[in-house]
Amino acid sequence: MGEYDGKPADAVTVRVWDRPLRLFHWALVLCLAGSWITAEQGMMDWHERFGLTALALVVFRLIWGVVGGEFARFSSFVRGPGAVVTYLRETLAGRHPEYAGHNPLGALAVLALLLLVGVQAGLGLFANDDILYEGPLYHLVGSSLSGTLTGWHHWTFDILLIAVIVHVAAVIVYMVFLRDDLILPMITGVKRMAPQDAPGRIRRTPWWVALAILAVCAAGAYGLTLLA
Ligand code: HEM
Ligand code: HEM
Image 1 (cartoon, rainbow, N blue to C red):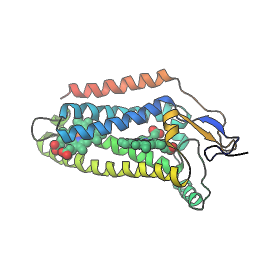
Image 2 (image 1 turned 60 degrees about the horizontal axis):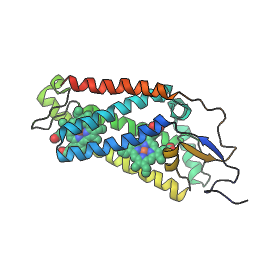
Image 3 (image 1 turned 30 degrees about the vertical axis):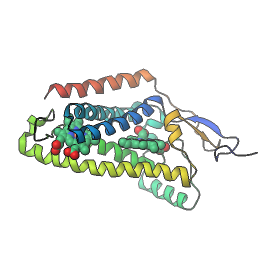
Image 4 (image 1 turned 135 degrees about the horizontal axis):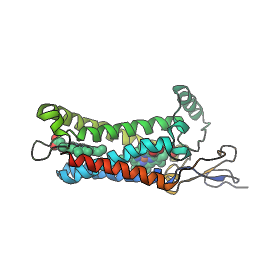
């Protein structure tokens, strides 16, 4: 028997990424691109909209990480440093262990990216552009501290940009060197896996729960604009 996309012929299809998680991911990519472009163009009204949407998405993801589907849950993929070291050792030795959800190293990247985006957008709330625009929580800190936080908003972005480049580079390394395409599952939600690696029962959370959480997060973000 031959092989299908590098997987055994008897590979099974596993639903790994639920729809809310996939929508979250690609919406976040759009919001970060939008925040970047609008900041460069000085379009602060749109910068605020994209930035606050990114913030709402991150808060949504944190909650979904507790109540969402099996592989969205932090408890299903965040592991200790020992697991990360073992994973790295195995992978470098050519025995790339396959995971249905995030692998132990990827889990660190997930946490780092979420943290960075959250901090970036959080700082933006207090920032100002020295001309016309002030973030919605500017008045809580005043001009001098806002200046400092605006500086941080600039350099956190550089760190975020580096993190995103590393993230995308890692995904490409998996595809090219480990013959493990992670991108298609992030679009379709399904992964093909060897039967012995496939998980058993998978916990699901109904879509309307995601919608309700998202509505609360969006309302919170909108509420912030009213504080300006
Ligand atoms: C994660 C989302 C965000 C990203 C990626 C982002 C990115 C950036 C970048 C790259 C700049 C610098 C532009 C430049 O002068 O070259 C900037 C400036 C700024 N951002 Fe954000 N931002 C985000 C969220 C926010 C939010 C939520 C707010 C406020 C509600 C905000 C308020 C500002 C302000 C006031 C400036 C002007 C700073 C200045 O002119 O020195 N940002 N942002
Ligand atoms: C602004 C840029 C990006 C940010 C902030 C970002 C952030 C994230 C986050 C937070 C996750 C974890 C998903 C979760 O469990 O919630 C993730 C996973 C993932 N991202 Fe991105 N991402 C970005 C761009 C991209 C791009 C351009 C690609 C495609 C080339 C990509 C491909 C993936 C893949 C394949 C995964 C799943 C990794 C796995 O299987 O463990 N990302 N990303």
